[in-house]
Image 1: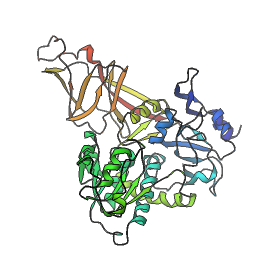
Image 2: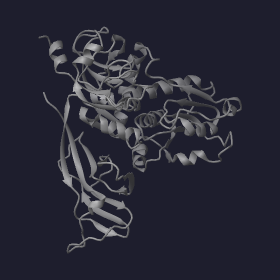
Image 3: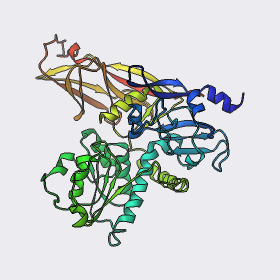
Image 4: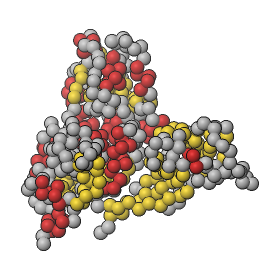
Length: 460
């Protein structure tokens, strides 16, 4: 059998489909049927796929993204051509984006992909497949945004570096790349995020200031407030975009590239007719031509060294896609995620159930940094059968424990130091017997905590 035939018969994917009861669910599946449904597009071995907000919506069966079920999500991929296409020889490293992938045709959450030839462009030699997808469509969107805003700015504003630039939803993948790209241009960047865990990361990426979304909603009801923003990159939409528009300086430019905060925009014409503000929409999936995308990737390769040690990138195997999609839709994900379809996840747990201390309504535990963790490994704080409690790690608030879920998990790779302290605040629970040094086991009502070290292995 040919390499193409062997590869197709071994393909696996994350397939989203509708159950008999009408609910939508996803899981790892054989990929041969999806490949056959894709037609005769050139075959690409997927080495990495980006995980975008749109992919999380597709995983939930959102009809605005998942146009028909069953569907393999994933709107972008990096890998190797298995046959010549798009003017490139077999064996060429490529990136594949847009053109209906993960929406109207099988997408990149698979070991194999048959995209249309026009979706394929060369991958710069400086970018590995994982690095390319750490930036992915998020990076393309940011560069398209910067180019569009530069065109929209009045001539007197072009090329200037004055004024503050606001990035909303800055703790997400697009937001973090936008912060880094603006800072690289010499802009003064204000990163808007409600996640305390993101603050040190955003400052490392180049943010001069961190703002909570509530700060932007001052003086409600006024159509205009004191101008502050020379430009805005909004990844959230909804009320936050409306608040940002009220404070844009005369001649300022705003890009709308997300809808996590809502699709409605309640505003007035005043920012546009009294301050000459320009509002631009950015569509990275369908508008850029193949030649334009090919020209953008070398620019992303130039940006990568600036962010590679600062941008949090979570690695996922196929069977971890559902959990990340749910966390992303709940607003609990941080930074970017990359799916390695051919990888398997190996897990090692460190029990944290013992050696807790009680202080009022809080339970505290100290622990050191796990040994044996290698670059690319993820460290997750996990609670099995959680109760109800607020969670703080090294002074950073994490999503609260919820008793209505079988497990709770949060990636804490970027939060851990050599010495760490976790604190759980909850209503008073029955006391527990202390040992000789005043330590107790965490009450079962709060669940069973552990650190989970996750390594991803790709077999040769």
